[in-house]
Length: 139
Image 1 (cartoon, rainbow, N blue to C red):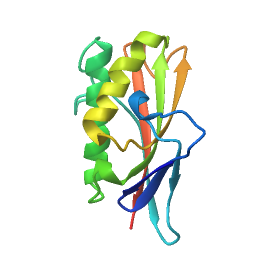
Image 2 (spheres, helix red, strand yellow):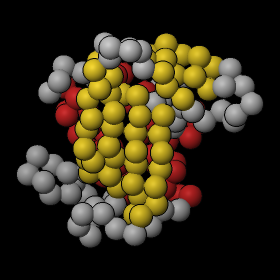
Image 3 (cartoon, rainbow, N blue to C red):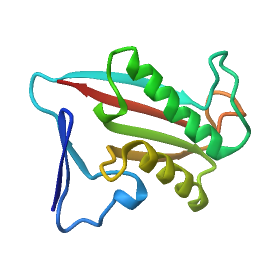
């Protein structure tokens, strides 16, 4: 079992389940009682004016995670406080797992938060290919 302390929560990847970290997630997270949760709505690969940064999937993924960090900073939190991600991928296929896993590894290293990935037919506008929402825990 892998048990990683992560401010302020604990991530656990139990023995008997595959190692999810190469795929960019952990199996479970424990948030202590009394911890405040900050929920970040779905962020996509947008510039401050709302326009999509690029039609490129990888660029949208990277920008969406930067936008999560910006949203958390408004609450004096960082990506280290993220407990859970929910990712939405238009026309998902296996080729899209690599850019997502790479972005998660670049932002969380060997201790990624829990994550659920959903393949969807479309998102808010036709040019949005990826969206991510986050739950962060403040001690």
